[in-house]
Length: 637
Image (cartoon, rainbow, N blue to C red; front, side, top):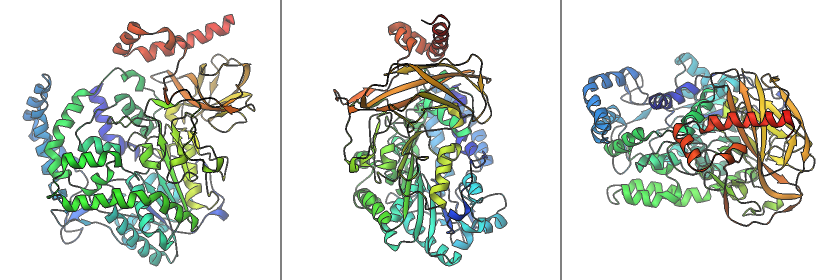
């Protein structure tokens, strides 16, 4: 199982890029702007080469899998010895082998300790004409150099491929250098297209580049709409874990990441909650010192280090004299550019631009950093929001830090305070959305299209269809619940039923049981064996209990379901904030987000520990909670 997980991790990004989905709806053509779109893609999306021209030079970025396989076969005996040493806890032998081969493979990507490139590295496509999608389709029919192709394919429902451009950069360099290159492309695209403005669709590292570009060059007013999805504006926790050799894979988060990325409707993550990928952690952490001289001086990696981790990482890993130029550039980002981003983005909005951020929340960093995130980028780094530690939430009665004109900025799960965000009124938070999964979620996909191609939405209050806080509808989540008559994630006196929707794309779902934690509500019983087709909903009336006349209190609803898959049992917990009266009094700062269902309460102490050790806890509690629900139903206990 562990080896299987490791292989899946290696290929998850490739897999997700190959999934095709259809647009969930069409925008009104009269609303669509005719500005060209620049795709500012995620980290390492640009092809690089050394030599006189791309045709005669050597492409140095883009793994050649045949070369990787040759290296593995060449070192098979040495790797075997290293794996044998792992059985007694010695990761150094295999780490030395891997380090040597990685350094050789990426030698031409190496930077000096001061952050300058050892080799004269160039981008394969640079100009507006070269990066235009229509031209790229002719020149590179296999799809090379066209970014975010699943998104782009849907964008072409609204604009021609000749109106889509693909930004490239030497991603090793610091984000300011990349932002300057983006400004250069924007000026070129304006000339090439004959338009006075552009729209920008940015992803991950592209979001950091775009936010930096807007901070430095927003005064030019060259942008109409900019949509920054899962942006690494304030860095990436995964970079800190990697640079500091403190990787500690969260295998349950990893499996959910893979499930959502591949849109599988199987549910495997609960099977591995008791397992640890310690041997992979040991290998990676032992390998990092070997490859640091090759990869560790990339300025972009240092700009990725979150502000609160930056000084210590710099002190531990960089020589003040050798790396003076690298430190100077990264210091400028951390201490001069980054602190201005919120103010500068708001100035762009005040000057007539539409700047929007869409971020994922509710996951731990997959490599170990214990913060609320989309599994790669912390929510704080993406948005500037204040978050509770992962696995905890703000206690009931929590008051947001900034007033924001009396607008609520606290998420339904009370884990996020958006009042401190870079753009409190222009940031959308999607609980459960994983990094890079925007296109696999009906809600975020539709939101992206509306924000990018129209001027219909100017803030999170423009359209009730797109509230500031929402849960993901990725098909791997199977079901989605909300209370009728209420905003998503909210419960108030207008609620008279719970609406449960099958968000799978392929499989029917049967609702097996429903439990509430923190609120005493009873719903009319689900019909045995009744199935919901993909997209179909069932509305269950509230027939007992009451909605307290309080506010600022978070509760949860857990829906158990069955599907005709290899893992037929599953559940999903969603959090709701009660907004139905005066705020409750806060008694502590943080509380655990762990839910309590009947058999979560029964299984405690040694029994719970034993089941977790055996990897059976999730399965046993799921099965028994469903049985208990139906016993309660039949005998009306």
